[in-house]
Amino acid sequence: MSEKIAAIDPQPTSGIHQSCLQCSLSNLCIPIAVNKDDIDRLEDLIKQGKTINRGDHIFKEHSPFKSLFAVRSGAIKTYSVTEDGEEQVTGFYLPGEIIGLDSTNTDSYSCSAKALERASVCEIPFTQLETLATKIPTLQHHFFSLMSKEIQGSRQLTMLLSKNTAEERIASLLLSLSSRFKLRKLSGTHFRLPMPRNDIGNYLGLAVETVSRVFTRFQKSGLISVQGREVVLEDMDALVDIVKNHGKCMKPE
Image (cartoon, rainbow, N blue to C red):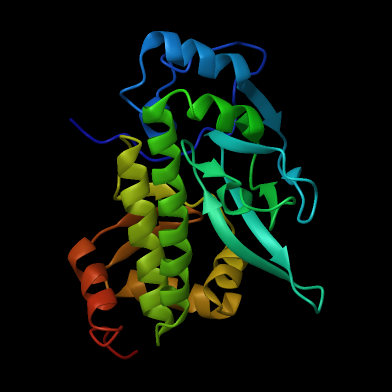
C-alpha cells in the first residue's frame, strides 16, 4: 500500500463542531490517557475550528497573551521583528502542533503567528487550561511535555543555525519535516512544502538564491526530486549523512 502524500489540507471545514476524540490529530495535542469525562471538560473550554485566511494573523508580537492555539489544518509561521524592522522567521507549525507555548511565562506574545495558507486552529484559553490542568494530572503532565519540546525546538534551531554549510541546514529542515509528517501518518518521503523559499532562507539564515542553489544541487545529486513545492526525498540516508558529516559528503559542482 502506497503512503499518503503529505499535503496539509488548506481547506478546513468551518462551522462544524468535532469532538477532540474524533479529531485525527488528538494523539498529538491532547494526552492519550485522559478519560471521556475529562475530555468533555477540555472541550468545554476549547474554541474549535477557527478559520484563518492566508496572510492573516492569529496573534501579533507584544499583544496580550491569552490563549494557546492548536493547528488543525494548514500551516502557520511564527516570526519576530528585529530592531531594524526586518522579519525574522522563528518557526513553522503543522497540524497537531501548539502555538504560543513560548509565551506562557509572559503577559504578551513573544512573536507573531501568520497563516502560510488557509488554515484552521483551535483556541485554548490559557488561564482556564491552567486551572483545569491542576485537576487532571495527565493533562498537566502533557502540557509540561509540550513545553519541554518547545524548549528543545528552540535549542535545535540554535544548533541548526550554527552549522557550517547551507546543505547541512536544508538537509536538517527536510528531515525534520519528514519526521513530523510521519507523526501525522502521512508520507515522510513525499510532501508539499507549506512555506515559500524566501521563508526557508529567512528561517535558516540563508539567501533565497542559496536555498534554490542547494535544492538544485540536491536534485542533480539524486537526493531529492522537486516540482514546485512538491518534494520527494529520494535518498534519505544521504541526507542524514550530510547532517552527520557537516555537509562534507556533497560532491562539488
